[in-house]
Amino acid sequence: MHPGATNLITDVPGLRVGNASFPGLKSGVSVVLGDVPFTAAVHVMGGAPGTRETDLLAPDKLVQEVDALVLSGGSAFGLDAASGVADGLRAMGRGFLVGDQRVPIVPGAILFDLLNGGDKGWDENPYKALGRAALAAAGRDFALGSVGAGTGATTRSLKGGLGSASLVLDCGVTVGALVAVNALGDVTGRAGPQFWAAPWEFGEEFGGLGTVAAHDPGAEPGLKQGQATTIAIVATDAALTQAQAQRTATAAHDGMARAIVPSHTPFDGDLVFAAATGARVLADPVLDAMALGHAAACCLARAIARGVFHATAAPGDPVPCWRDRFGQPAVDD
Image 1 (cartoon, rainbow, N blue to C red):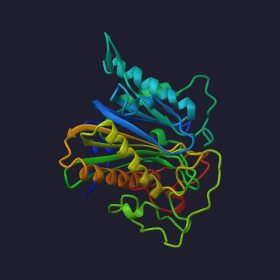
Image 2: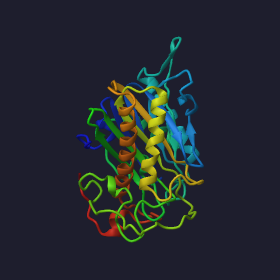
Image 3: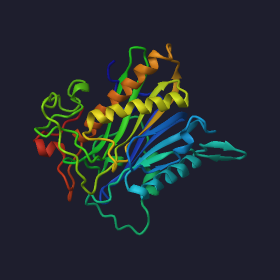
């Protein structure tokens, strides 16, 4: 396995990502858009999820494909971002055909960033407009860190962010991950800048600093207002059924647990969507599917570290960003 050309989820052919950020609000929206509808599934392991249209992603439901997936800040208010995406898709003529009407299928998930120092005194919910703006910005290249759904994200001790990574398997299948990191847990050990995800790092994609000391157990769990929920999308160009996609989402949660300590707490709404564009048929439906789940977990762990690694400071942040705390200069990769 090796990273794809850009080390982004958009290395999966047929997918685009759009981000919209509202700096004063310290929040934003990220959208994964398919060139055509794609198979999608979801798995939730956190105790406090916030979602839209996730029930229809079960393998026994009528609709098997979606037009887009949305990650948003804003807690329950952020669920309105998917309405803006749906409006934009409808204007494009996209959606599930019912008679002479098209209904865009846009599942979404939110994270809690209402206590991160941003101005939340809006008169009108801003997330619908942010969702439509994110859709309009969808493309193959996009920034990481304090953008999109990761704009105001935080972790226990550091600023969170939007991360992404990709892998190409030996069988030719591509896997990618996109994640908004906003966790009660930590992404680094207590002693220094090393990331819990370091064993899965390629090159210096998040600093190349080595692993956390073996004797470092991480900080004891505690509740801190203002951060909760890591939401992610793992994607592949493999042809998967909705049940297989759900199994991939389930396996990807291993990557979250490797990169955030602790993860999946009662206060986090930790959730992973899976997306499959169907361009490549698996040569071995059993072994290749198992390898795909492992790759999804590895990608997600790396994406989480990259999101925090690329975060940038803003006035009023409740916690420092990784670069400022550990004195590391900004880099482009």
